[in-house]
Image (cartoon, rainbow, N blue to C red):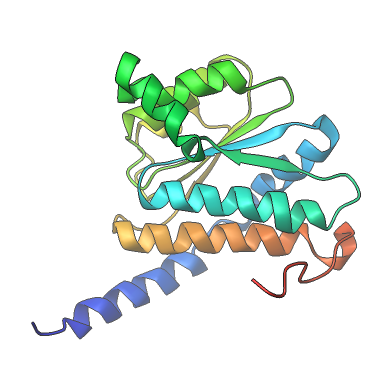
Length: 199
């Protein structure tokens, strides 16, 4: 099997472009939403499918252990996708499209917020959960691609990545997670610059 180096390089080039095109005002608004959970004592619920699921889990880890560990009053975050047994039970009995919404409806409390991640913005289970959250007064932030998709209808904060290539989108969504980590743990916010040096 031959390597398609030109296609791989094109993906890297598009990733760099998409990172440079990120809207700094939206990034700041997302950071402020997460920082506000320190005051509300709420939980950031993350969710996605496939690679977006892993990005959501990564975000929950960075908020809970990295950012939270650097603050006097911690910020909490949990990934809906990590509740695999519960999610499969809901999906088996009521359908995969509502498995995330079912969990949010059971677990979310006032002061919480939602971070929904979807490259296409059209994943029914993510859209349904975001819709429920928005209709019930929970702040909803989304990470999506260039087109936004149906998820855009239910977002308070929408960060679009200027691409429709799924690998590029997943690259940049993870960059956003690490941007948030750096923004929320800088010295002026009360935490060390690298609270997990041995990861």
